[in-house]
Length: 124
Image (tube, rainbow, N blue to C red; front, side, top):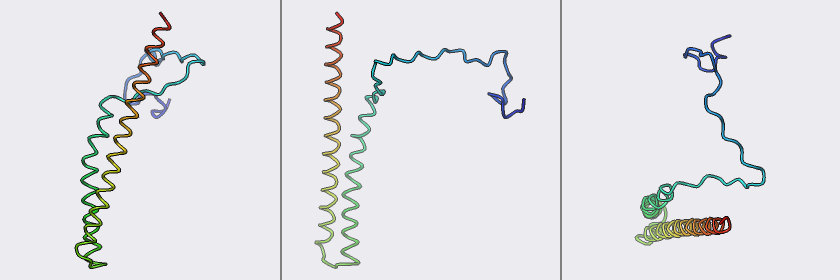
């Protein structure tokens, strides 16, 4: 057998190349597939990136306004203030998006807990 066809090139072949662990059985067809839940800490990464997003939005708005003011319009200081205001609006939109996503995840968690409680009560 050529070396590139071996399952683990560079390792000595053992008597058995079968996997030692058995695969988990598939769920029955009538049980709906539920994707794995996101870890709790992963929800906090969305909120932690919000500060960076706010800073970048406001800074880019102000710098963009300054650039337009200096090289295109010469409407000092109004163009820079308009760019800053645009950055603040983009940052506020990011805050609202993150708050809505977090509220939706809380509602989803509460609905799952209610379903679990109802299923447990029905099983008893």
